[in-house]
Structure formats: structure tokens, C-alpha cells
Image (tube, rainbow, N blue to C red; front, side, top):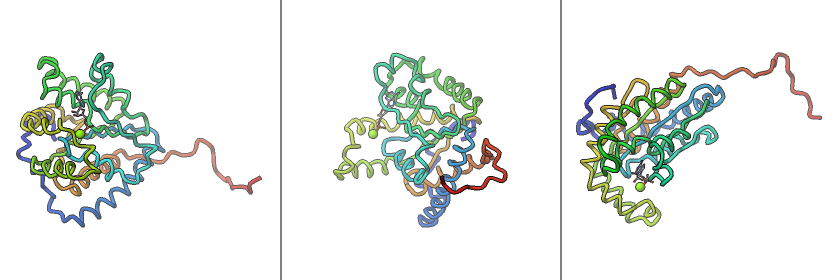
Amino acid sequence: MPPDTAVRLGTFDPADTGGLKEEVAKERLRDLNRRLENLQELLYAEGKHKVLVVLQAMDTGGKDGVIRRVFEGVNPQGVQVAAFGRPTEEELAHDYLWRIHPHTPGAGEMVIFNRSHYEDLLVVRVHALVPEEVWSRRYRQLNEWERLLAEEGTTIRKFYLHISPEEQAERLQERLDDPTKRWKFRLGDLDERARWADYTAAYEAVLSQTSTTWAPWYVVPADRKWYRNLVVASVLVETLEGLQMGYPASEDDLTGVVIPPAG
Ligand code: AMP
Ligand code: MG
């Protein structure tokens, strides 16, 4: 999203496929996936840049699927996932970024946020967990905090996985019907679904006010899992390629070194 745009989610089709056929998209994803593997290794080897990927979505939007599919084969040593659920009492006793900051990436690392600091402008706003005067200043605070991270060398990309309420109904039904998926289903998910319009408004405010040049949001059509994965993978590969990374030399002078027989 370009900065300072009034985003209306109704203008984005969750079932968009960019005119691609599933088979073609899957083939492209395989290619992007391999490139991502190499780029992540380069990121780690160079040890310079920090990369933060933020995933947000309504329930069943596909955050877990993106992590599984887009990062398939990527070396788990250099990629971490941080999931943010309901805050503990200790976390609530602090400012809302206290629990987030320790999970931001260090040099050479990539971190994926499965939910994020944005919940403090989403679930918190929808359920009025804090007064409006408190949450309303968080748009500015988050922009400033992300700016700090960016100025200190963090590349940030934020994704809103955009599904339709019809697709969510199907996915929730699947979870209900499949004993291997039922553990993901909570009755509370239905209360959240009942607040679809409120969440949409909260997401629109986030997308309109917190997409910045240093930490842009992408609205990803997510009804088709294969297109969703392709879009996220494309953005990440393009972003990492844009960092112009290079493999560092060894710290030692290796000219003329021959591997001797083992002693
Ligand atoms: P799940 O992603 O299904 O494991 O669910 C995590 C739950 O934690 C969701 O219902 C989120 O809305 C909730 N959650 C995450 N962050 C916050 C927060 N800052 N305040 C309140 N609830 C949160
Ligand atoms: Mg859930």
C-alpha cells in the first residue's frame, strides 16, 4: 500500500489470481522458494541485514500456511517464527511493545511475526480492551517504532492475508469436520467472525495509517492458497534481491591453501 492512502478492502478481490492458472503459479512458487533458500543463506552469511516479516489475517486467513509453504526448505537456523497470542499478566503490566521488541531480528536473521504488535490495534480496538484515546495514538507509535527498527538496519515487510467471509466459513467448517484440525477451532472464533465488519474497519485503519516507505503493507488476495503463497514469496524474493547482498570473504587469507591429508 502506498503511504497515506484511504484503503477500502471492498475494492480488493480476495479470490484474485492475477490471471494465473494454479499449475503455473505452483511452478513459479517452486522457483521462488529455491531463490528464497539461497537468499536466506546469503543473508545469514553476510550477517548484515535484519529482515522482519509481519503476517496478519482474520482467523483461517492462512498465516500458518504461508509459513509452511513459502519458507519450505529454508534453513531453520536463520529463520525464526514469533507468534503472539493473548498477552500474559506480566506482559499486560508493561507497555504493549515490551513483549514484541525482544523478538525482532538480529543481524543476518529473518523473523516472521505470526500476529504482531498490530493486534494492539485490531483485537484490542474491536473489543475495546483499552480506551480509544489509548489505542488511537498507536498508529503513530507503531510508525515511529518501525522507523527506529528500519534506521537501525531492519527491512520490514507486512502482509495482510485477505480472505472473504465465505472462504472463512468453508475453512472453519473444515476444521469442525476434521478431527485432525479441530484443535485449531475455538468457539471464540465464531464471536470474532460475528465482528467481521468491525475487524474490517480496524484493518482498513491500520492499512491506511501504518503503511510507510520504511515498513509497507501488502494486501494479499488469500482465498486461493496457491496465489497467496506466490504473492508473499514474490515480494520477499524481490525485497531480498534488492538488498544487493554478497558473500563475505573468509577472515583468513586463503591464497594458495591446499587441503592436506588428515593427520
Ligand atoms: P491464534 O493465532 O489462533 O493462536 O490466536 C491467538 C489469539 O490471541 C487471537 O485471538 C488474538 O486475537 C489474540 N491476541 C493476540 N495479540 C493480542 C493482544 N495484544 N491482545 C489481546 N489478544 C491478543
Ligand atoms: Mg485461532
